[in-house]
Every structure is written in C-alpha cells, then in structure tokens.
Amino acid sequence: MNAIELLLTRQSDSKLTEPGPTPEQLDIIKQAALRVPDHGCIAPWQFIVAQGDARNKLGEIYHQSAVAEQQEEKVINRAKELPLRAPMIVIAIAKYQEHPKVPRIEQVQSAGCSVLAMQQAAFAQELGGVWRTGYFAQSSAVKKALNLHEQDEIVGYLYIGTPEVDCKKSPRHKPENYFSNL
Image 1 (cartoon, rainbow, N blue to C red):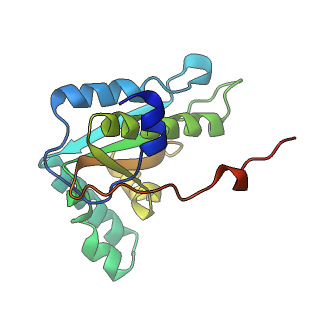
Image 2: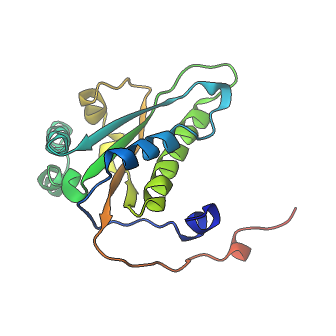
Image 3: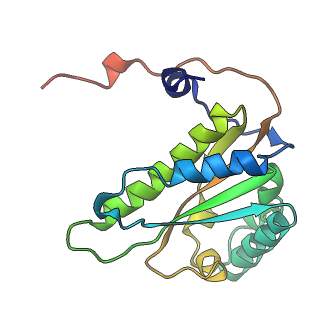
C-alpha cells in the first residue's frame, strides 16, 4: 500500500477479532508511534500494550475504577468486557514535561499523533484499529492503577486486530466544506 492510498483509505474498524498483530507487525506499529512530530525532541509519550490475559487485568482496572468513582450501573456492568473487543489494546499516554518552548497542548497533540500513526501502521499491514477514549481515558482511578502521574493524560486506547467484516467506507466529508483561502 502506498502512502497516498493509506491516507485516503484509512478507516476505523470497530469490530475486531483474532488474529492481532504478529510480533513483527507490532514492531512496525511501535516504530510508527515514535516517528511523529516531537517539538524539542522530548518524547512526551508512554505506551502500554495489553493483549491476552492482560486485557482481563485492564477490564478489572476499569471495573474497580467505575465502582470507586460511582459511575452509572451500565458503565460498571460493561467495564470488564470493554478490553475484550480486540486482541490487542495500546494505551497511549501523554507524559507532560515542563518545558520552556513546548507547551502542554503540543505534547498532548504529539501523543495523539502517535495513536494515528499506529493505526495507520496497522491498517497498512492489513489489520484494523479503532481509537477509543471516553470515561476510562479521563478516570483518575484508571490513571492511578496504571501508575501514571496526575499531569499525565491518556489520549486514547487503540484497539487493534483483524476486521470482522471487510467494509470499505466512502468519504464522508468534502474538502470544499472545510478549506478556504486567506
């Protein structure tokens, strides 16, 4: 797949199954995450990979966090199952570092770029992925369970696997509706 084809056909695939990435595919995905824009070369990211039984551990973290933070019953009831929606999940974290020239927003954006780069690397290798956020990305209890600092931010959970259905999605937006000349 060439770069233009990748950029113009990339999509989110929410229904993912086995197999997940091979070790070789995962290595490429990891390398892609580290090639994103990084003002000041401070590498403001951390990644946690959950696959196999580790997904159950993540589900337990979700469940305990939802209970501790008194979430709605439906959130508590679904918590343990959420990480089982794909063979692999990569938790992407912005590790904020005080820096005179690199504000927080740039560091968070860099971590966000890493999620897109990983998803594109997965897609280029005929895998599927979907970037999820929601309550568990904002939960202080989840951050604590993952040994993150208060200033760290979970920018997303990248679910990776093999798409259950081969459903090519057509473009939803037209450039002329979003671009103008100065």
